[in-house]
Length: 305
Image (cartoon, rainbow, N blue to C red; front, side):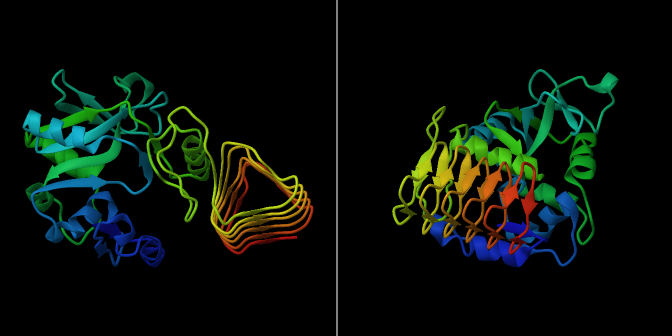
């Protein structure tokens, strides 16, 4: 079940009915944004029993089976996945008792109030009946309303801590970092650009994946870690990588260099152009000998002379 509000048509286009992953996907669409809890409440009538809620802007290889076992073993009715971070300042903290029971929530704490390094990592296991606590049809927050209310009413609520890979990909810099981590084998997943194949990441190893129908010209260098999607064409003397992802149907012109970059599908890079440490949307055209530098994000269809 995908609870959606923003760019719903794009999500449907990418995910479809779920058949490519051997699952059945349904969509609960918000006519107006309802917040982190309101979106869950909007889908409440379509679920029952035990509900696993996952935020859509995180990348993790958390072991959900272990989390479900913990939830059952503790007799919990609401369990929150927690992860440890070095810099807690952007996050709300979750303080636990010795048995893992949630003691309190600390939203955006001052340095003096930072009593723990565990933060809400955006995955919850909930009894479906608890979703009735969320008011229907209005904006509501899991972090500021639902969980504090559960705690105040002494509903069994626990925190499950895991040292698995986790990153919030809600900014361009973190989005690019997620790609670098995938390339470096830091994440246990089989994610890859469409048609590029992949298989499980080699933990601690670097990935070099080139789709079978990709065309490589003379003296092309593809330096790992690198992923080159289906239908890509790399022309003579071009250089791709390290730390680079090419979506399907990209063209890299003669003598061009692409390093540390994430290119979506259908990007055309002109001869002699240089792209470094940037994110390039679908269908972008980068002209011959152009320079696209670190931190740049080009929207779909952009044209760089």
